Every structure is written in C-alpha cells, then in structure tokens.
Length: 457
Ligand code: ADP
Image (cartoon, rainbow, N blue to C red):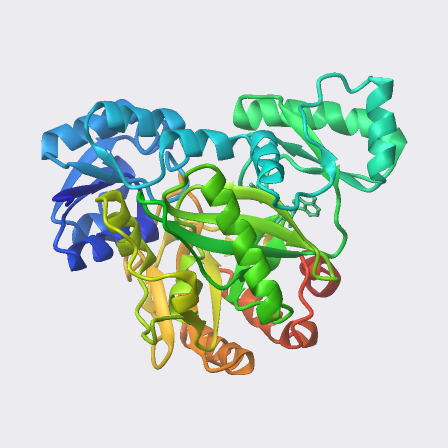
C-alpha cells in the first residue's frame, strides 16, 4: 500500500486528491510554485515543498524538480491530477525508473492513447465505432489523392491535431477550396502548441452530443464502466457544464456505449481511472473520439449519480489510488445504478461579458453555496489571490437531484448563493444557460452556445 503520496498538481484537483488520500490513511505532500504558496492544497497537505517559480515549465512541468521533491520528502507515489504531466509518457517512465508508484495507467497505455490517430486505429481494431475519416497523418496537403478521399468522407470535415488536447488546434472545413490553407494553418498551429505538425481529418458531425464513459480498471483485468456523462455545453470545444445521465440515452444504448468503452480499455490492457470520449448524432449513433488516460475535471458528476451495490459514496480518486496499490475493484458494471441526476458547472475566473477574458486577482469576499445535494470542489477562499499563470478554473459546483428538473433548480439556487467579489466569474453565464428553454428541455448539442447564448450576450 502507498504510504506517502505526492500530488504533482495544484488547485482544486490537488485538494481533491489530498482529501481522498487522507481518508485512506495515506500521508500527503503538496508541491507548489512560488506564486502558489498560499493555495489551499499547501495548507491541507501534511507536508509541502516549493518546486520552482510561477511559470509551469519551471515548476509543475519540471520532471527533475518533482522527482527531487519526492526524494526529499520520502514520498513513494505520485498522483498527477489532470493537465500538467498527467498524460506524459516520459514522466510515467521516470517514476517507474525511480521506484515511485505512478497513480495512473501504464506508460504504454498513455502512449497509445496520446496519439489520437493511433488511438482511433486501436479502437477500430477492437470493434469500437470511430468517426469516419482518414486514419493516418496528413503529410502532403497538395496530394490529389487526399482531395478525393476527403470528398468521399464529404464536407464538412474537421482537421484535428494528433497530439492535441484542451479543444485546441481544431479546424472545421466546409469546402474543397478552403481545405489546403486550413490544413497548412492547422499543421502550423499544432506544431506551435503540441510540438508536432501531425494532423488528421475526420467527418464533422453536425449538432452532436459529447458523450463520455468513465471507466475503472484494475491490474488484474477487471474493467468497470459507469453511466455516461453528457458534456455538450462547450465553448471553443472546451467543456463548461457536464451532467449525468444524458437525457437522450436509454438503458439499451447506455449498455452499448459502456461496453464499447470497456472493450477499448481491454484492448490496451488498461488499468486506473480513464475516460473514453464519444461523439453522438441525433439518431444515437456514437463514434469514438479519444481516450483520456487520467482523472477528469468532471469526475464528480459520476460520483454523485452512481449508486454502487445499493450505496452512494463512490470515490473515483480513492479507487484510482487503490488500483495503483494493486487492489482489485470490488464491484462490477452490473452493480452500478443511476441514482437521480447530477450537474456540474465549471466556475472560471473569466469575464463572460468580455469574451471570457481571464480575470485573475484577489478574492475580496466569498460565500460558498451549500445545503442538501450541493458539493463544491475548490481551492479558493476570502483573501486568496488567483495567480495569472494557470488555468482559470477556480471551483466546480456540483449538484445531485432526484431528477433533471430538480437538479437544474438546485444548481440555480446554489449559483444564486455563490457570492464572490474582487474578480469576474462565469457564474452569470451558467445562470443564463440553465434558464434557457432548450437546456431545460435537454435539447443540448455542442453548438448550443452559438445557437442560444452568444447572440444574447
Ligand atoms: P480535445 O482533446 O482537444 O478536447 P476532442 O477530440 O476531445 O479534443 O474534441 C473536443 C470537442 O471537439 C468535442 O467534444 C466536440 O465538441 C468537438 N469535435 C471533435 N471531433 C468532432 C467531430 N468529428 N465532429 C464534430 N465535433 C467534433
């Protein structure tokens, strides 16, 4: 069993992991950059150690600094959280070489799923439906054969970076004329953002839903899938609101998607927590997009909605830690029932009236919501200053209601209670979305914001 866990992350996810580890009786080590010395995770952990200055490349992304922190504190395991080094094959490899347990999958799994072209090939091989497209790297944007192939797929198509993430580097192409220039720009963008100009093309599915399946798999070959999350409320391909279950999916389809996700995990001998992402059209056809080999921001909706062997209280981070320690999962997919409806709103320090401009700064006053069925995962407090260096996520507000309508009402009530001054946040934006007729009716697709919100702002 892991004795001392170093959390190679910051903010709300570091706090989340520290809490889970403490409940398991594991000692915790927080790492922090110079600008993060007052961040809540440094206060809650048993020990803390500074790993460098503000820029992430010199602190949270510095493998030598993090490994040294592990050695200095005697930590025997690392939880990478999400973002930063969580899907970095080399980091997982270094941990292994240093005899540090990496709370995540094997480096082979990270590598296979890290390249989206390779991931699609593996999914196809496992019999999982994939978005129609060209499953190889585009090398020559001038190739006449390429135009032919793209025409076969049919416009619109989407160009995606093979090593991409965070909704970045995607380009929708509507006609043959704009294909070449779009490809060249996408390749350049991808090179800059991800260090590789490897891009691929797939059919652009219009008005789809983003549906994803949380899985857990242990080192003994047991794989469990959970009820789906619907993450269709997105801005620039990045999620803002997530819910579970999806109002459009029935029990039969749920099983089918869940099994597809489990099949992919089986194909790569996956272990740890992971998420298989699909895109789904209005007819309920679903296609694999990618797999995230880490814990995700939106994991709490699954925790709140899942009833395991008749009990609430699922903790995916604890399960992840136990799996890393070599334990077996104690339940199966058949043991999981849906207990109501859960919604999560990502509260970002951004100004929704100014095109979501980041709004870091000092939090003057803070009153957090609470009450029956309301959970808040956050690292902020009154007097805390949000640094400029990192992601703008400052809190996740999650609710559980007996049905979707109740969950929406609860979320609106909680958003109303949430009082924060000194910075701008996305709270007013969430209120607007939740009160939109289409959202209340569950008529939610990835183009929701363009259709119903932007024209109103
Ligand atoms: P990333 O890893 O950058 O988040 P994803 O492959 O997960 O990229 O896609 C992010 C979002 O982009 C999806 O949730 C969806 O909204 C949109 N998207 C991706 N592929 C397609 C597609 N083929 N058709 C329509 N939308 C897509």
